[in-house]
Length: 204
Image (cartoon, rainbow, N blue to C red; front, side, top):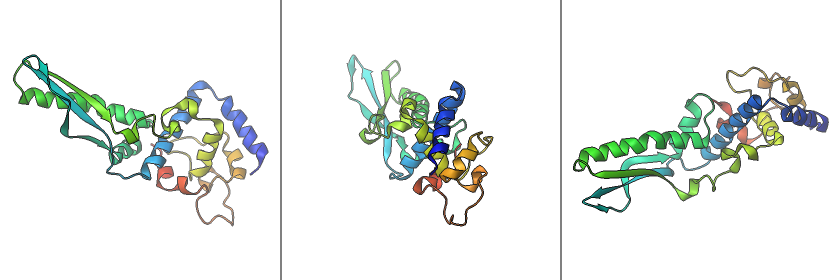
């Protein structure tokens, strides 16, 4: 790797306008979440909905609502299919925002009228924001070298993006032909190893 090219990339990234910096960090958080979650059990429970009800002046204990579960596969689907580069926390919060209300509505039909009902989203301890890769959930944890390494790892810019102005600087560092870099005779697999596998292919 040419340290001068990397240092120039660091400089250009550090001086990007704030909206552009936020966009690149959001892209990175989306990519990092897909990369991390794809290596997990797709049936793992990321979180669930629990409710309690108050009949005749006493609250019940919290109980799980059937089928109101968010899995790793659900989060990956959100990261891949939703527009505007959703993040890990966005996908979880979107699920909670409508499923909590849905669970409450179901109970209102099952329980006597005027029963007080509370529902909430509950994390699985393995997938709490404090337990996952910090760079999936905290944009301040992402530095210029993280962005550089991610761009080198993926085979091409995210679909719909204009070729970044610093793409030529990525070529000497090992970026692939999808970035506009000339193919090298030694290239037999996508540059960057595992991160360039499925998590690096689709960045919606």
